[in-house]
Image 1 (cartoon, rainbow, N blue to C red):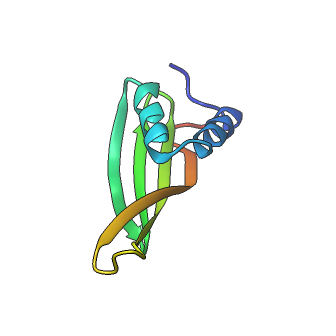
Image 2 (tube, rainbow, N blue to C red):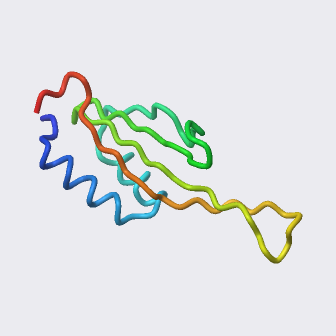
Length: 98
């Protein structure tokens, strides 16, 4: 399979930005046979969770960044997590020169 060009990566980014996290996660899982989940909901930044996929056959890395809203106003002693997809980063792998 051929590597994605800059225009194709931009198109993929635009498509993923319109989806929820679960929809984007599922779409990425079905895109490529040679894929690798680098990390899942890793807390690299404060208050944000990152999930990164490496699509080897496409020469692309996709990072999904989520915010966590964990306040329940009705029950202050209860923690309720709600994740929202806020950013999608689609970048080439080091061997992709397109």
